[in-house]
Image (spheres, rainbow, N blue to C red):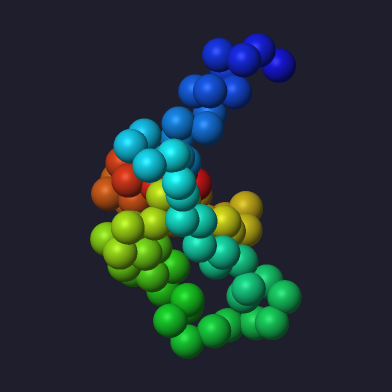
Length: 76
């Protein structure tokens, strides 16, 4: 893996000014079933993005439900 490639991928989730990130796990529904607040994933991810998260961790179906707004703000 090249150093440039790694840097490009890290810049997708790290804040360029602070070099910090907030990653929100949203894959709990797979192991424990539906959770209030995570049933409507697009709405939940929009709220997380608006709150300042840089990325979300989710199951394989999460990117399929992504809105354009999510994709512009978050690393999925």
